[in-house]
Image (cartoon, rainbow, N blue to C red; front, side):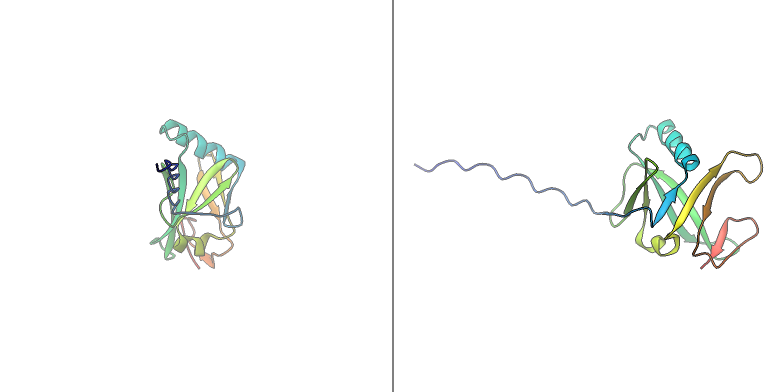
Length: 130
């Protein structure tokens, strides 16, 4: 008689993303509070903030931010100030060492990126070159 074999545990699905740290990007407390509020309003309690760099703007590159449900394949995930932030590998080249802040003011309010890699930025602060 053949003894039954124990079922093999299912192989864990590959995450598809890497885990980074705050040396890539970090959020101030103000930015973290705003992102958490926005994620909650959208019903994405476990969601992520995607920070990307795309071509455009008057200086050549600009930031794009988006709220998503989860990291995508090849993303770099950073937990900072209680918020999960994801950056694609190409954008990571441009945002390494950056700080994301939020100001709730009438003029110059909103999210601002302090990027040590930006060689120049336009007068409105919305685009940069590296």
